[in-house]
Image: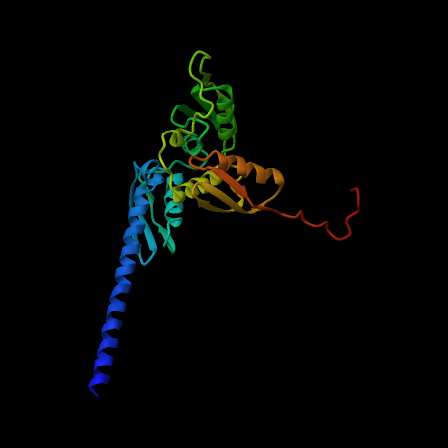
Length: 273
């Protein structure tokens, strides 16, 4: 009888220790998620001027506070979503000031500025952006003609932009010209975490008119990005690779997207018509 009582007591002790360790483990995971979010590259750079609170409960994260624009709201959610241990993200972030109406000049300026910052081979900080009736005006100095042209390409691909007038000057030949200009984060030697890279990739694809409707999955491991999902055609698939390759921190792109089969002809269609 004494042995049986001892065994029951032992089982009870072990069970109580196990039950106590579960919330302790969950608490440690939640603390790690909250800390990893705040320490991520996206939060330390793109979102450093925003007031964002990250609260995790058993892996279910809630974001509260204010951000400056729509892209920042997306960036915050995508960064947290890609952290280990996160099960879901409830994005309750609000705009700190009244957001401009979609496709207005002020909205386009903000959209173009943020999109340029998502790319490595253009200078988002050195490019001045303004708008007149849907036409984007670009000013500032480009390191070379290729960078100037690429800046125009990215600006044209923003939904709502009717045209681009590029008045940027090109650095004189006597000045140092760096063909890798724009890879400012990489050249500074700062490591960009995988969660931030995935968030930047997804937000960048959403920002561009040509890729915003793509059903794309993104996985990042040590800076190497794998794209999955569907593209309408080979050109769309190639463009996604090109855009993603120019995201800061991306070392390589593996594009496994499948191309949608064209819709079959309607029954009774006549060949050659």
